[in-house]
Image 1 (spheres, rainbow, N blue to C red):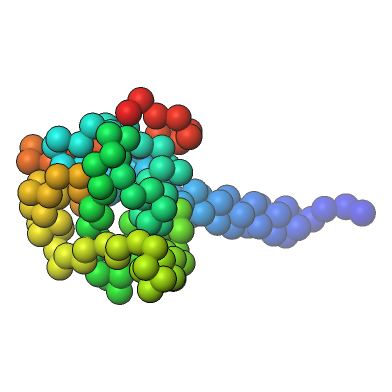
Image 2: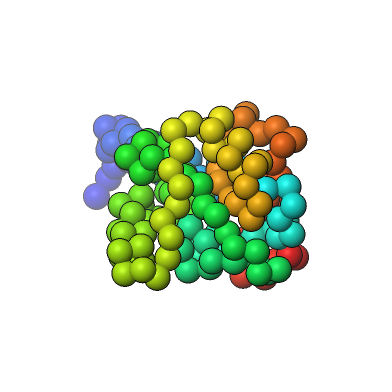
Length: 160
């Protein structure tokens, strides 16, 4: 079987479409290292580094205190807000509805306290700055010196 000019064009077109699709997929799945969000804590919080699994445990309401036994207060934007959905997917690696289901299950059963919902990133930054032991997230461009930017690492070990 001999390939004709149009067969080669078709193969080239398929190759280009596959490459474009792969490129879009790679850009759609941001990691915490290239996400536009930063995780912030109160300046006195001793944990300056968190692993992804620790961050998931905190936002999943399973880790309730820092290493020094200070209770963790979680701040979040409205779960119906697109920014919350983006943070969940891009940083935590879960869908917002999955996180909400876990929050509902644990808070309704009395095993955890629901995160405090704030109406803006400015409010979140200010609340984290004023609340010892607190954690939140904001866009990189909202970061100021009144809060501490947590280093997120991919492994399960952290520096503390």
